Image 1 (cartoon, rainbow, N blue to C red):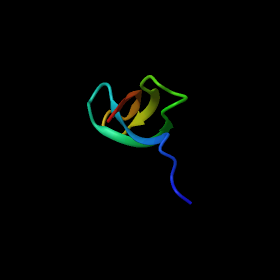
Image 2: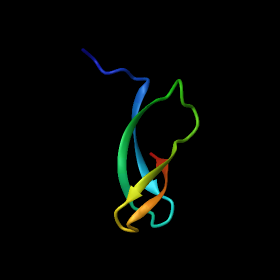
Image 3: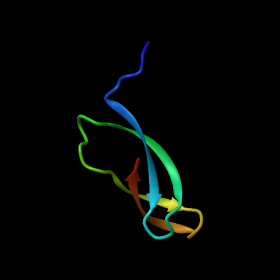
Length: 54
């Protein structure tokens, strides 16, 4: 079973400290714009906005 080329792996970067904490998959055809998720940052020790980077 081959992986779909529509789903790509993206990394999430903290908007406050700049550390890449998370990686996730997204469907490129359904979600064209970049992801912005509120996740826990271990460096800041609080929930911050994490933005998608390649």
